[in-house]
Image 1: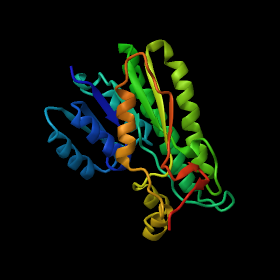
Image 2: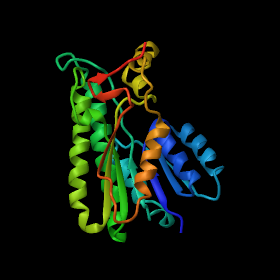
Image 3: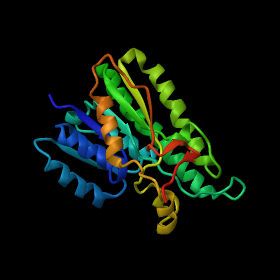
Image 4: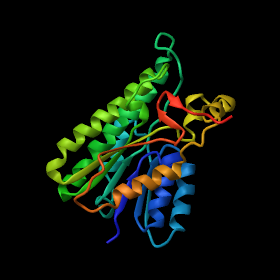
Length: 253
């Protein structure tokens, strides 16, 4: 029987790459996101991977009622979710705490923390019933160390770190694996979103760095997801070779 993976924030970056990686390996895919046009396009691409099924769910993880309604009304054939990837997340703004935009703060906390919680609360019971499952939370190296102007983004990813550890404890008796993936510098839409579309600022983030790609993260998740049943990678920090910590990297110019 084919396994089913559900990926939040699947319309770009890590989420899209994860969906493609698992589709190519014969998994049925549930993709979620806010941008319906991108979801439709991705669904079409995934179906071309082979004899798999794809369910596209258009909702915003920040909206509890939407999450509860959509996941609560999944067709019976899609309720056996084997893997959940809590990927939806973002950084917005890069300001000192005294000048920060509180709307940006709300957006990060609502997506990175509350969205992850809402989706997990809806999906985890479906795994508990079957006494099996694997939850991946996409954290960040910024959830391990802080940096100047990182304040609320770091706080949201520290929350993901803590939630991943506590989820693992809570779900231990239910035979459910929990893995946190904590990437360092990865060149996706991340910087463009953080700088609200400022192309030059976004480019400078990765200047001189051979950064991680979305495919690198997808490969790591696939590896963790396909280990023997008795093996769980709890926490995986992944950085480019040129990055040693959140504040230490070597740029080739």
